[in-house]
Length: 110
Image 1: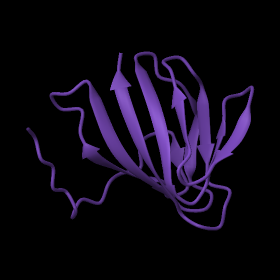
Image 2: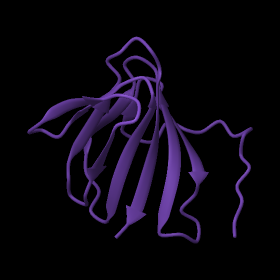
Image 3: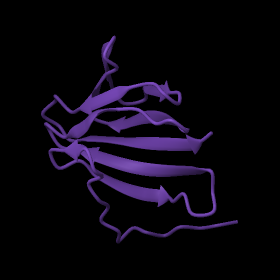
């Protein structure tokens, strides 16, 4: 069993992300093939179009809204909604709403 108590942690803005998006590792990759992160995006915050070769990512909306664009499809998730991107699936994210978005990102290394 592992317990992570990082309530004082502040998180970071990863490369290729913008607009004040902040990502906090809740369960880090260290020693695992997955991680869980809490992302917070103010209006205008998000991430550039990218994909992951070896990772699948599930996004679960906790608060606010987040708009996703795959290059072929554009959609907005609201609280309680989720999306799964398999390895190689492109995705762009941006908070177009006035309220801060908060969502979990579960990344699984394939």
